[in-house]
Image 1 (tube, protein in one colour):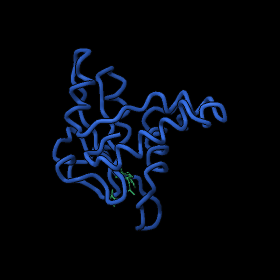
Image 2 (cartoon, protein in one colour):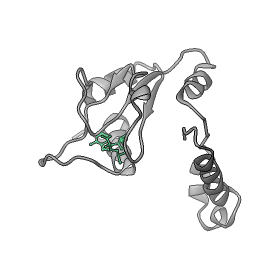
Image 3 (cartoon, helix red, strand yellow):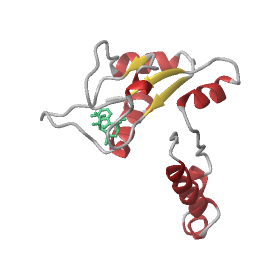
Image 4 (cartoon, helix red, strand yellow):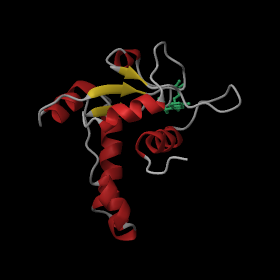
Amino acid sequence: MVTPLTDQIDLVRQIIAHWTSGHGAVYNPQRRKALALVNIAEDLHQVIEALGQGGRQPQVVVTSAKGAQNAIGYDRMRRKIKDGSPYLLVFGTGWGLAPAVIGMADYALAPVRGETDYNHLSVRSAAAIILDRLMGCERL
Ligand code: SAM
């Protein structure tokens, strides 16, 4: 989770604590495992640096409901991921990713689209669809 806002960082810490050591940890141990994986950073540079400590720095892949020039498609991105290089997939919140974050991207992923013009998904829906397209085992 990346945010410079201290109140947001506090909120994320509270949510993680609830599910990892509070009542939530007993209520849903599966969620405890997942939430225990969450780290908090104040900016994306910290994340890139932390992930790059093992050797190769990740390439940054941004997502948006809006199309970008030179956007990369899912098949191409999926093939790239298979080469074993590290990629950092970045999702935004309410208004999407800040322009400064988009400016750090090595790749902008093509937006998920349906049959209508409206394609502004909740981040969890977008993440689920995109992760399935890029990492899912079942290819129809
Ligand atoms: N207006 C924002 C935009 O254009 O990205 C929508 C923000 S949406 C509530 C939160 C996040 O979900 C976005 O930053 C993006 O990461 C992801 N997202 C939402 N709709 C998407 C789509 N159709 N394709 C790809 N990612 C999407």
